Image (cartoon, rainbow, N blue to C red):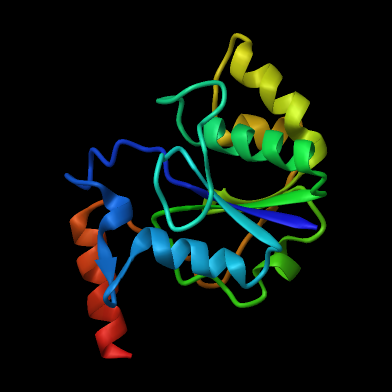
Length: 177
């Protein structure tokens, strides 16, 4: 079983407002992310927010620690609930390939251009805990290297909406299709 986890704990500083509530095609980014994961996962959670269109869990070990804290919270939840793996995406991710799980299987692996998009073994929880509670760099790449995750290169990179210009560009491209 695969647990889906939307990483939504960021401050949205570059966006200028709560990015998760920004709309694309009349739907919030957070709703779009939850729906995307629902195609592939038995259960979906949102990490790093108190309210969302799916059950929520707080970042682990605490807030303001970047995407690793979201992945750690999802891995804890997966391990505690008996899931084999966690499929993670950022709330600001759009245009994922239809065969994402197939591309990323077996766990652990991630999209080379956006390592927050990954399929992680629930067994990676202890390794991530050690990174977050230890000294050294707390980065997705360090985590990926530590667990021996495979980088997957896509022909077309998923959209990564970091600011309002990124959102406007994506909307423009969708209109042109």
